[in-house]
Every structure is written in structure tokens, then in C-alpha cells.
Image (cartoon, helix red, strand yellow):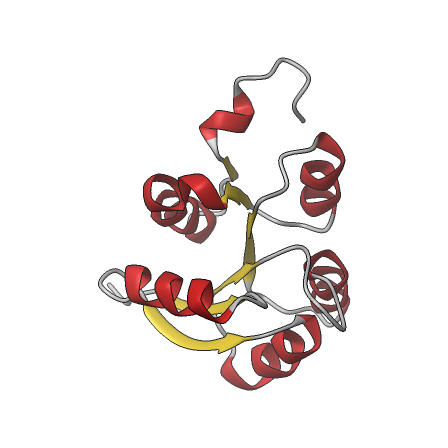
Length: 136
């Protein structure tokens, strides 16, 4: 079975690098991006299976980048990796077609699970968020 090709977008360089190292044993990390515009450019060239994206990035945020990728008919599945735990962010990401929503504090436990779920077309939200009755 082929390993999923992953593109990582986050404006914090050390976190991008740590995420890439963490995922390298399970997935093919094909590239990284430092903002939403860079993400869109690299996604068009690299054609990843899964995009891991932060929400809050300069130039173009992750949610807007996801919207533009969806409009361009990108087949990449999107998993957000973020510090934001508010319902409005979760809903906005899911509304743009994201299959995963992982809180950075739980990435070691949740990110691989989220990517694997996304590859199967299933949704994954960090369980720490799913415990609230009012979550989407």
C-alpha cells in the first residue's frame, strides 16, 4: 500500500519541522508551507493526498486557503492542526470540507489518527474537543 503524501502548512518554522519529523515514519512528507498562499502554490505542484494546515497564518489563513483549494477542485484531504478550540473555528473548517481537526497540544496522540481517518474519507476531531455536548 502506498504511503500518503502529506504537505504541512504552519507559520511557525520549528513546529513545521517537528511535525514533519513526527510524520516521516508513517507518511511521505512532500513539502512544507509557511502561509496560506505558499500552501496553495505548493499544493498545485506537489499534489499531496493530505494537507495539514494551521488556521492562523499570515498573508492567507488556513480556512481561506482551504476554501480556495476546494474551489480549484483539489483532491487533497485537509486536516487542521491548531490551537483554536472554539466551536466557530471547528464549524468553519468542517464547512470548508476539512476531515480533521486536531489541537496542537494533542498532536502526538491525534495527528496520525486524523490523517489515517482522512485517507479513508472519515472525519476525526481531537477527542478532547468532542467531549463537549455543543460541539459540531
